[in-house]
Structure formats: C-alpha cells, structure tokens
Image (cartoon, rainbow, N blue to C red; front, side):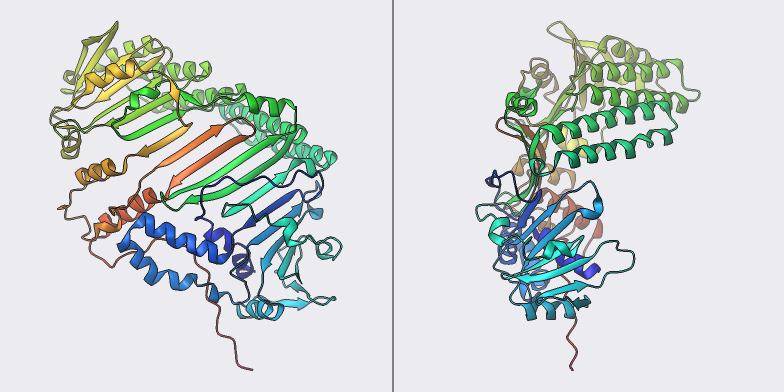
Length: 571
C-alpha cells in the first residue's frame, strides 16, 4: 500500500517547479465535482525542476544534482505512466464520510504497461468484473476500498467506492484537466457544488467534535484561548458554507528566482457579504514601512492578524497564561525585575487589545566604513510604565551591567533616547558587522518602541521615529542577495577552519536569496500567498551543513525521488 501511495503522490513530490503565473478559475457551472485538481506531466515537472536547481544552486551544485539525483528521476523508471500528459483529480463531499469519493487520473502508456508496473512495484491487484477494471489489495486497517479502471488513456483510481468508476459517472479527462492552468499543482473546492444540507451537517460535526476538547484543557487561560479560536474557526466555516463559492490552492515556483509558493484564492458568492468584504479589502500596510530604506541588506515586516475580536481575545488569554507562568518561575527575583516582567506583559496585552501590532526592522548599510546598522520599530501601548520599569530594573543589575546604560543620553524631537554601550561585551562577529563602537539606542513614543544598534544608530533611530506607513507584506523576511553574501562572509570568514572548502555549494554567485513572504490581497477574490525562496533553503541548509561537516564529499540537495521497481522475475 505504501508503494501505491508513493505512485499516487508522485506529482506532489515534484510539484516545486512551475512558473508563477496565475491560472484561470474552473468553469462557473453549478454542477460538477465539488473537488477538482491537476498536476503537470512528469516531463514538465522534471524539466522545471532541472531549470530551478540550475538557476538557483549554481553550476557546482547542479553537477552533483545531475550526477546523483537526476538518474533516479528518470520517468522511464515508471514505465506504465505516460510522462507527456498531466495528472487529474476530482471528488465528491458528503457529511457521511463513507459516501465521499476521490478519483485520481494517472496518464498511462497502456493497460498492460500500467498493470505490469504495479506488479513490478509489488502492488497486488485483483481483476474486476468488467474489462479494464481492477481492485487493489489493501491492508485490513484500511477502511475504504481502492479500485481502478483504464479509460481513455488514463488509469482512474477511485478511493471510497467502486461506484465512482461506473461508466455513467466517469468524467472525461478534458472535463477535469484545464489546459490553461499554469501552476505545477492545483486543487479547488467548490462550495456551491456541495448540497446545503451537507455543508450544514459538516459545520455541525466540527462544532460537536471540538466542543469537548475545551473540557480537556485544565488551565483557564488556555481554555479561554482555545474557545475564542474555536469560535473564530466556526464562524469562518459557517460563512464559507453559506457564502463561499470556491477556495483554490496552487503550488508554483519561479525557476529564475527560486521562489516556491503556495497560493490560496477565495471567492464569495456574487453580492454576498463575504464577496463584498473581500472586494473592500485594501492593500496591507505597515505603520513603519519607510524605516527599511533603500539600502537594506535584510528586512523584516510583521503585521499580526488582529482583524477579528476572537483572535485578539485568544492572544490576550495566551499572554495572561504566559504572565502567570513567568511569575511562578521568577522565584526570589528582585522586586524591580518582577515589576519589569509585569510591565512587559501589561504593555503586550494593551498592544494586542488595541488591534495594532506592526513590526518593521532592517539591517541597513554598509556605510562608508563597510559596517551595518540594525534598526526597528514595533507598536507598543503602555510604553511609559514599561520605560519606568526598565529604569528601575537597571539599578539592580549585577556587576558592571548597570554602567552600560545611559538614560536620557540624547533627544530626538520630544523623545528621550537611551543609550546602551556594549563595546566591552561585543563578540568578534558583532564587531565585524557593526564596527568597534557597539552602541545601541532605544526610545519610547506614544504608541511605539524604537531601537537601533550600530555606527549609524542615532541617524537611523530618527528615521524610525519619523517613519511613514506604506504597503508591505503581512510577513516579509527577505534580503538583498549580494549584501547577504557579504554578511555571511563576515559571520563565517573564508579562512574559518570550520568552513568547508567547497563553500560554493552554499553560496554560488548565482544564488538568489529571497527569504520568506506572506501577502494578502483583496479585490475580485481574496488571495493569500506564502512564498519561500529555495536559494535561502540551499544557502542556510547546505551552508550550515557544510560549516558543521568539515571536509567531506559534495552533498546533493534533499529531493524526493521515486523508488526504482525491482526487476521482474523470469517466468
């Protein structure tokens, strides 16, 4: 059975290499399958994977990929599957799980070739009662049947019941696979194709099955947080059931930049409150967007999801739980330290409760001396009491630590700027990046906390205090490729004995580091896109491995590959 699942999920294993191009939605017919999906052909996926690795990893790593991985990705290892045609999927949804059906369309070179391949993979089958049909022999613990039928050049593999393979119920490949779809993998759920009574029953089932979970949570704050999160989830599920039309998922990758993404689009029924809310959603903004500047080597944007009252309530309860746990862990700490911890949690609760919790930060530079400065800002309510608690806590710091702080050292506008001199404590890596004068600065505004560290700290702190809001991703941790490479050289110099000689595996000239990004857009439909740069994964994954492993043979990237079938026995 595990080999069968490997075959069924083959398209997903390679679905990391497709052009990041939006595809048209499925037809607008009210009838048809509630679930529909597809994946590119094996040849297309393989070619895109090769291009992706070559463009992102560089020549040296691609040589290892070509030598050690590509031979195992040869479509000829799956002789029964036609590598030139795409895969398909469709299914039905029912409140009675025993009535749910899923049908996978696998392109085949021929019935005999496909059945011979199953035999070579040691996947047992029995012939069905009709020509071209067969049943998989499943383990006793699999509660549903898995059967197949060869039809129109495809192996239709049904999960849930053989009735899905009746000729009158089969969908033709052209009715499942959209030739205009550009994503490597696509899956959509059409809410308007699910009967109203089924949607109502599913929401009720979710409500019933999550109701008793809260009773198993002992801590009152965690129970309250779970209840708020559950209420939010149920509200959204009911809204989707009543007003949703389609939710679709696409796996894409830009082979030039190495950005791999998962995109979700949501459409409401025409003129429904959900559709109107999606249409009114404007671009996501960050209150401190401009502080990143044009010279950022690394940037970070975060906007907490505090759009719903239930989300705020859940986070506040989690903060209260953390505050209680922190109080119990402090033991015999000085009262000033206890007061500081309480002040932090008080400020955090007030910030979350306000519904505004943006953060922006950047490592900017290099300056004329080749050094960088870190700067950041975050929403912070109840800042005055937190600032006072910091002042009091510093007075009881042990040793010379208190002498590092200099309060009211500078003024920027009406704000007092406090200074922390960490020169005596700075490690060599910090000096290499930020210079020898390692001073940090922080200031509390009316609703925000600002901080900086590095040679241009005061200048950039002023920019942070004067920062203007602007468009920004909900989450964005990305970097400038060239500057990031130089930063990594400062962190792990080329002559570091722990650095592998073949460092090029992790830092090719062609390596593009885009980082991680999550965007949310409204308009005709709600689009949520999560993007991860494959170059960053290779850089930090293989680079870290290279630094820790020392001299060793070159390493190829971890790529899922199909298992070669055993040789067929001679009869």
